[in-house]
Image 1 (cartoon, one colour):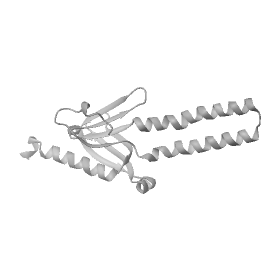
Image 2: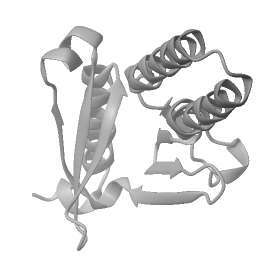
Image 3: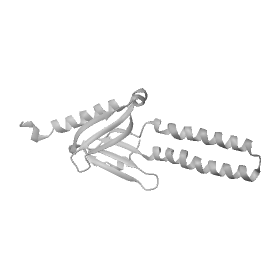
Image 4: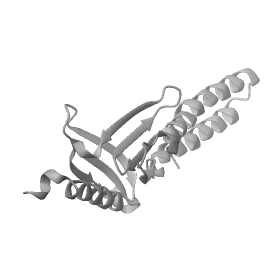
Length: 167
């Protein structure tokens, strides 16, 4: 869904592929409603063509900035967990990405506030053995399922590690 299979290494397969929860679109939808309401109120209050046209141009700029831009950001931000790594990609014009090999992941946790619990999403917090320390992935849908899947992958990865067999 979110990452091309051409970007995977040989023997690597996608386990979880998602983008942030659609709750990230609630504010842009609210902004659209407010901008349209303001435009209609101003048009009805001021019946001058030039002023009304200028207001609608400002409303259009507001729609692009507060509605279309966040939707594009939401559409282009992806999180993928493969059998070997965690892959994050984001950016509309300039694409940025971060890959964390699962062998470097030392801890996986999640955080959920009240709204997240109602919507079934949350923030996945991944601790790795690097100078970055932790990577927080906000608004992951089905957070508990994703957390369990990642924990199982890590367990399987470490149980297959020959260094651990002698311990």
